[in-house]
Length: 262
Image (cartoon, rainbow, N blue to C red; front, side, top):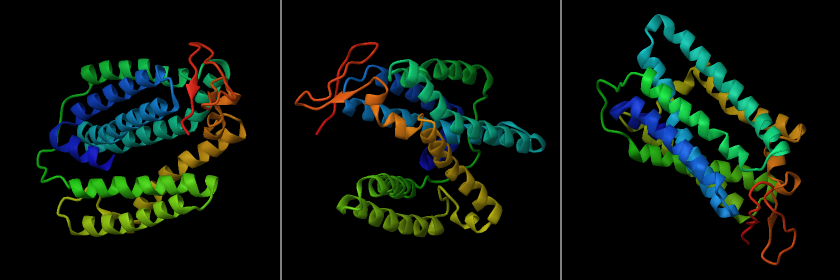
């Protein structure tokens, strides 16, 4: 997301938004037609890539479009909307899984992306940074490495035990973060000015945003609609079966059978 934000600032903020919406919608269509665990995971990766293009582009467009006097209000609305979406996502997904096929969690994204694409073309003016130096691609790659390793550690360790994979992910996350910070402190145009985290207000706001998905996920699990619930597709009518045929289940709408790879 950090790297996509820098690329959008340099070349086209609206172009980054439109491309992100297209990737997001395309990944959702791909997920709707997925027929195995592998393709579901691949579709989720595509959707997340699109979202990583959209999020920084929207905030950058706000800063570029609204005058200084109205910018704070616009960013406040953006922050509040993001918080509501983060909290409502697991609940909406749970409701869809309760009454429809699991593919509905992908399909619901398509009309939203289509409407947003049209709105962006009509309402959002094209813009880019007046002066933008060389993009720190190495820093962007390091951010992907250490954040990805951190997520892997968070998933693997608490849920599946602190085995070699989880420990290796923790080491990669720590080393990657150290290299990322060192790189950003030296680069003239860093993807993130890490010195700003010494400002309590800036650091606190980012910590609150980062903590919000976990809070909404825990709330969703308490109501049986969070990721914990979605992780048990056999409880929602979209069951995976092993190669030997045990626990076979049919897709409730398309009657496609999903196979969990071993």
